Image (tube, rainbow, N blue to C red; front, side, top):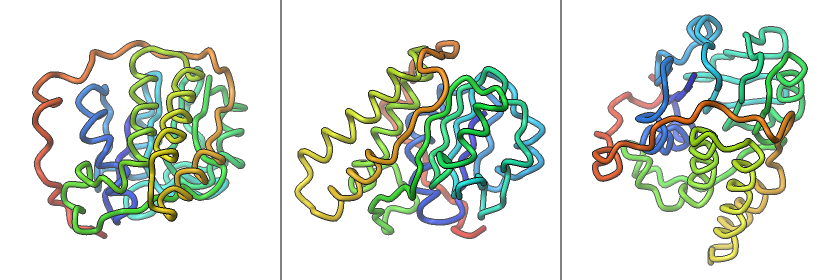
Length: 219
């Protein structure tokens, strides 16, 4: 399961990196843009992963245009799944509840997930070098999960990537965002959990980026 909302600049930015580097190697179902809604999400949580971009709160995870697609009262089948939520605050309540419901591991954030976005690149968010300082370590973490490595190894990739980017970042605001996210990243559950390895990103997708995202913001 992969959820990629595109309704505003933050979700479009985060989803953009996964569209570029994760989507071509992920398995269905893939809920992108307006298809990322509550009913399909609740019905189609099959497979061994839930990897989701969206707005969040301590107990809620949202899909396209902020629609709540999962909360503590409506947790779908997560038994033995690895869950990665690229969203604000879900590490406080929802993450622990997912583990209680049988998820093998959860990776997410306990506070707001913050980064700087270049609004001029809203149609090709994967080309945004400002957003990449936070989003590429997260993307690399997701791909480490899909490589069949343990969630502990994937979480280390996330933390190490954020650490490296903070060390070389010259802009104070961007560096503070990176360090804030690093502090609030959390791994819950079994750090030795892993999922079936997916094939690597096919060569054409490594060389040629996707076409621009044509779904208008707030569609």
